[in-house]
Length: 275
Image (tube, rainbow, N blue to C red; front, side, top):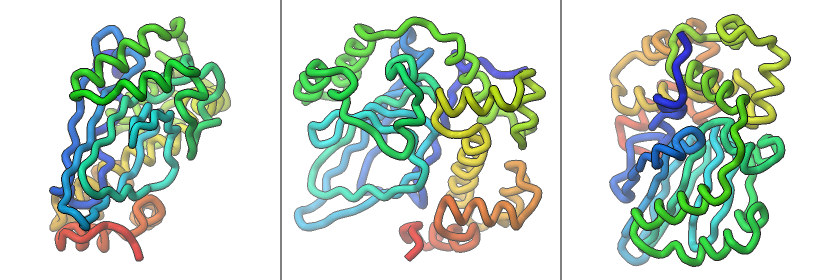
């Protein structure tokens, strides 16, 4: 049976490529129960580096919209199509609120696809109150969470049944290993392919095939980083990739390295970035 997104995660904890750098700390915090239908979690990245030294982290984004406070600027980040590298130095932090896939449209009021691969200042969406919120977010993380949640509650949208439907489908793509093709989704949820594609374009900002591939590749990268001595073909088969050339092609396109090269880089604790 399809899983219920109200009680399970609709995103993974994967996404940081390579062996996690000791130069930064990543913490995750659950949302308040009354916000959990639309908010997946809050997160905080902090770092403290010696003067003159910099470090970086490479991410493979989830199919989610995030509200991000970075350098005092509050922005809405759409689904990132490609991996990206964030360079940090000195002492700093970035705080974010990750919305469930498909769950930001009620706040935006228009197709989320407009944000895919880009974003906008929160002030463009919510006006001066968003700028005031950003200016006030200087305290400890529990205060940041409380401030953002109060801000969202004051702007909480009317229920949208399509958000729940998309959430159930996304949770199925994430958790059910028997789902290997989009056709599996159309059959399981009795939804025509064209409607499914339209729903995902409007609510998630990317196609269901893209979501399925991204979740599998995030997990593949995590497994190869943690178990770099395991044959990559074995990992691919466990994740539903039975065509090795297909897996190599998808993995290389997303990560920038072949599975074997990526595993070797992780073993040597090198940055998993193709040069």
